[in-house]
Amino acid sequence: MEIAIIAHDGMKAEMVQFLNKNRALLEAADVKLIATGTTGSKAEKAGFKVKKMLSGPLGGDAQIAARVAEGKTKMVLFFKDPLANHPHEADVNMLIRVCDVHNVPLATNEASAQLFMNSIQR
Image 1: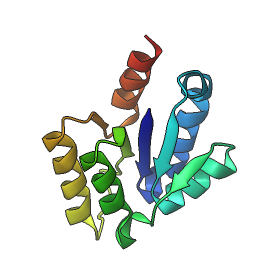
Image 2: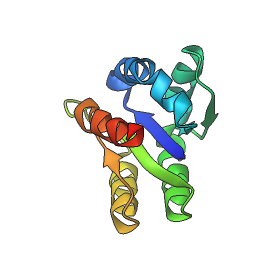
Image 3: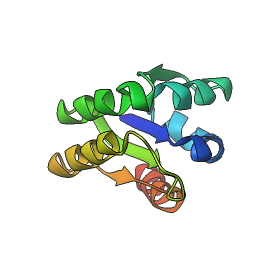
């Protein structure tokens, strides 16, 4: 199963903590991670194997949306920072729309992402 991980700058540390907390589950389920560039680099530094796309503002969100539309990415974990402005908000909205169109689960915070992880475990 391919899962995309994305995190705004203020949430990258939380994403890495989340991945570490769920490391055993991700490995047991043979999850393949893809990520926007900087988030992917942070995950790699934590010991995860990640296929990196471009940085979000440079088109990484669009690349992941394309993989969702192609049926390759089955889940998106996007830790959004609700308290910050983001210059590429249009790309974020496009990714959310593509997930909705293709009925792909999208978690925008740790609580919903953990529910998704728990469902993989079952």
